[in-house]
Image (cartoon, rainbow, N blue to C red):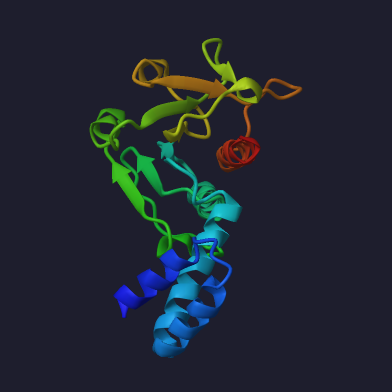
Length: 204
């Protein structure tokens, strides 16, 4: 079945004017379930590419020492909706599913836990940059930031953000400028980062 469906798929690339007729003849010979499976697979592929999820590279979101579980739930939901590959929490506290995540993202997007940032760095995928999100002088403005192909974005805790000793362990740091120059809720900040990445991918 796979051989015939692959031949059928390859034939669609040709420009022969009689190709459509031959393709229809082959389709009639294939089991209906095989044709449906191939068409359904291609539909999913197109949907992913149209949403930006199917583009090259990957990205994930992580929170350091999260204090409030609803914030993790909100970010987990945003990560799932915007096509992230994974979520992570860093620190002593382990996250439990929360009703703030109404999409039940734990069923669709994996969540990993790491004891500290060094533990996180040692398990980063190959070529993945660890990018902090923090209001500091060293940070680059999000508006001008070019997102790398592979990245994990790390947000700090709600009260203290990312400590200075952790900033030195990051590959890059970015910030979200606000009119009052104050920090945003961690779930909101992460959602903005996600949207900015997807928006800039669609423009390239």
